[in-house]
Image (tube, rainbow, N blue to C red):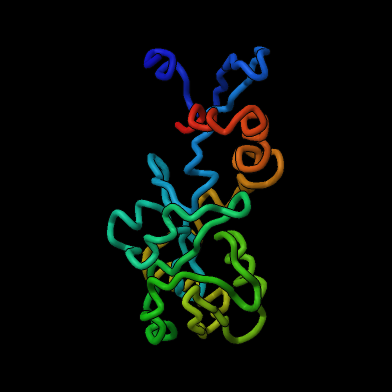
Length: 212
């Protein structure tokens, strides 16, 4: 049994023969890491953190890394909270890059975001879009604890000046430059929606077989 488990990796499938109503059937079970598709947070290994910087705000999706490092103690309750849709994340302000125009908002660091400029935020890409599409002088951010944050909407030149001042090469992580991994046809979308349907139909007791 242990040897069989160790010969498989995430993304592989295994075949299981089960007995239902006195008949045998063969199921193909995808080995999907359910922490990535059913919970808000998971531990991230061997990859750079995902981030986006705008108007001095450094936004990140909450991960177990932040919780374990004590950077997001207030959000620990979200660690096992189930997602409602593929790609759902809890976005929070990890820090604020202080400059002459942003020094008054440094206390916003650590705030988890519910809404930006009237747009409900479900992940970091949506936060990025809500900030970049705003043409007003200020960004209005509503946190999950219903606080209202008002942030100056800095110009492209001002944003670039902040990055240069803090020796940061890019305003976003590399993963945000490519297509998202939660759209139809992508791994998380497929795993979140239909992957376990056949297993559920054949008996809930089989669910443990795919929890890696």
